[in-house]
Each structure stands twice: as C-alpha cells, then as structure tokens.
Length: 308
Image (cartoon, rainbow, N blue to C red; front, side, top):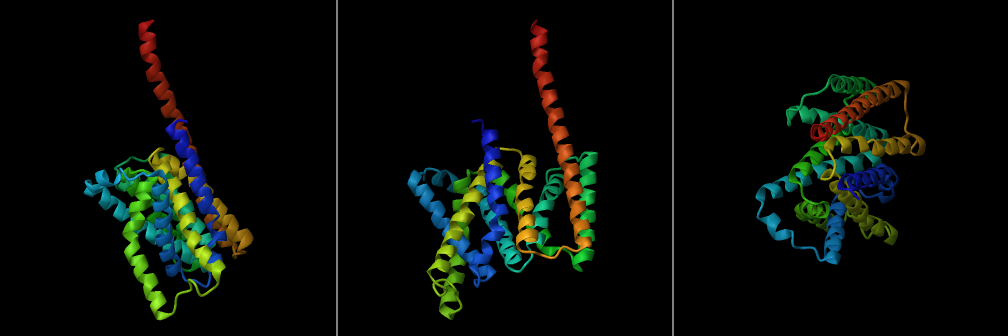
C-alpha cells in the first residue's frame, strides 16, 4: 500500500477514535480532569513501552539521543498535547462537549493561519474568505456564550501547534509518543503520589472497575495518537486538516444527541458560519489539489511528446 494511502487510513482511524472520546471520559468520574490527565500520561507510556518491547525495537534510541533539536521538538510537543488533553477532559466532564467540537472544527483554519504566520505561505482568495468566516463565527459565539469560547480556542491552537511540531520533528509515531510520555512521566507520577499521600486520589478507592477504566485510558490515548503520528509524517498537513472533520462531527453529535447540551438559535448560527467556512475551505483545497495534479500530468506528458 502506498505511504500516502496508508497515512489517510491512519488519520481516519485516529479521528474516529477521538470523535468518540466524549462517551468515555464521563465514565471516569469522580476523578478530576488533572488526575485523569496524569493517569493518561503514565499508562500511555506503559502501553508504548510494551509495544516497543514486543517489537524489540530500541535501535532508534541512540540516534535520536544524538539529535537534541528533535528531542527539543518532541518535548515541546509533549507540553502542547498536555494542554490539549487536559482542556478536552475538563470540557467533556463539565458539559462543554459541543464547545470542544467547535475547537476541532476551527482547527483547520488555525492550521491555515500557522501556514501564513510561520511558514510564510500565501493564501488563495477562498482561503482568506474561509478564515474570515471563521473569525466571524468566533465573534458570534462569543456574544452567544457571553465570553470568548476559550475551550474551543485552546483546543484548536494547542492541537494545531502539536501537529506542526510533530511534522517538523519527523519521528515515527510510536517512538515519538514514547519520548513525549517519558517527558511527562515525572510530573504525572509526582502529582499522583501527592494525591495518594493526601488521601484525595480516586484510583483504588472507587472499585476495581473504575481503576481498570483509568488504566485503560493509556490504551485509548496511545492508539489514536500513534495513528495520528503515522498520518502526520505520511500525508500533507492540509490533508490531515481535512480528515480532522471526522472527530468534531462525532463530538458534536455526542454533545447534542447524547449529552443533550442546549443549542439556542444564536449558537446554531455560529456553528453554521463555521460549517460555511469549512465548506469553502474544503472546496478550495480540493480544487487546488486537482489543479496541481493536472499540472503534474501535463509536465510529465511534455517529455513524451518531445521524444515522439
């Protein structure tokens, strides 16, 4: 299977799993968001280490250690994924599933802004229109909520930076996640130890089922992240952004249909503007990809004509 097609399949798998997360995190109550986050860090490392041990795949360690720039990028990725994880757990368990979906809806537009600000890319007119509608949607939803949609903005920007850093690091998915979770291990263990010492931990005090669910958080964290990492280094960032629509669509459905979150008319208007922005962005991306493909075919056909 070509690497690009494999990357797309990895991306679809990752975003589908993330889209169903709102069904899982409420099961971990009464654990707080930070305690759940710490368990995600610890048990994710256990899962990744087990996967590497089964494959007996440790040859990558020494070469990576000799590349401090890559290690620094992975440490930076660990910080931003921590912000993203913690914010998302808080959002789901505090009744903000729809707002968390908004964050992942606007993330492709954030990726476009990063392209302009950091990579000096030039936007096409329709891309500017999509970004403009996205900004308008945030303004409308700010009026609706009575505050800026901080949960959505934090999720969008933290995950956008995480994807950009992972792209720059260009380290295989499992190895990258191993380093990221290793960076987070000491603070996570320290916090969990403090909870146990103060008698405020829920792990082991809410029954075996609850403890197993916390442990399983490592598995359901590691698997989609590994799939995402595998996708990020195999397909363009713009394609990853298009695949990302899968997750917020599922999250939005969970918030409205399962969690029964309130959606007043003004909020529907804000989300409709976001969807319009994404429709414009998607249309422009597909059109640009087709034009690039036609140009490539034309260039390849020129030598053939000259030899006949």
